[in-house]
Image 1 (cartoon, rainbow, N blue to C red):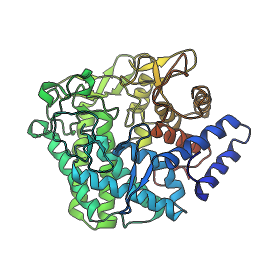
Image 2: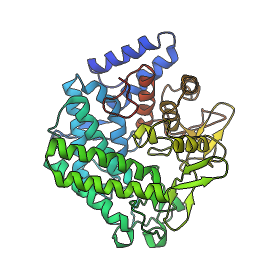
Image 3: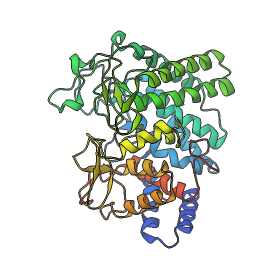
Image 4: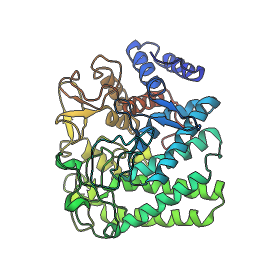
Length: 433
């Protein structure tokens, strides 16, 4: 174990212990996973901000850091020190976005460390510059949920406003990607690590959606309109409009956010659905606005499976349910069934590896208590004997897994277990308290 846990965290672990009094394995797994981000990845800065590494990589991803601390919003409701820590994460994220809204991962200091010498506009602060829509969605989501959990609004400061405008402007530019300067080329790498067409990606037509170079897996998009990421943008633009009206008193920003939301959502509905012969109307994973689609789902969030979790639609939405049946079937090229488990994997990891993150999402969006209970049992038999979650694991042999220290996955598992105890983050979709 690492640093001393705060009383609020110990109390939450005790609640889960009580909820699962007869399940020692699950209690141990939760205690380890829930505390892991706090114990091992939080780096308080001298200026009051908080840097958060992903675990086994020393950089801070905008996406991962938001997801890592999200369950701690439950503690921030009553624990001012935990709230200060999360507010520091939000401040750091907004500073990074202002520095470069196209970057996905950052260094703790401007030390020039980087994953690779890529052909794109790098600075010493950037670890990687793969442009992903979700990297800009997650910080808005975290800032909004932090407000709902704590009642605090002082994080909606000038830095937040500047970052929000940068996010809006970036999404507007990328509605017409041909007019964008963003490009990304990586040499001597697998195809999914670089963008085609001299680093600008495959051609796209105008749809109203906003373009993404990469998926939340950090793999390149095949077609530039990543539908689940655009869905996430629709949700957080609603959040931004609420913040602009209720806190900032900025009617122009609120209206701009609503207008962009409608443009993106219109594009999703017009270009992002496909009539499938077996499943009916379903959402595509990617499209180009030129008639091409990718029919699949990926374990990383935002995913099509995560739509209700993110707040894009209701769990019972018929198109979601059609899409869900597709995702959890052999029709999805990244759905695997094995001797020990079944679930959604990713082209980011080996074939027949499924992800604990996808299992957490499947559990939190499941319609029946039976499916939720089955997934809970799957977690207990797929940790490889470590009492932690991983990235991907072999469906036939969970002792074979990627990333032994992957805090996003631990936090997602923790959130699923908490939801099984009726404990959910205030203001979040699927909340029933």
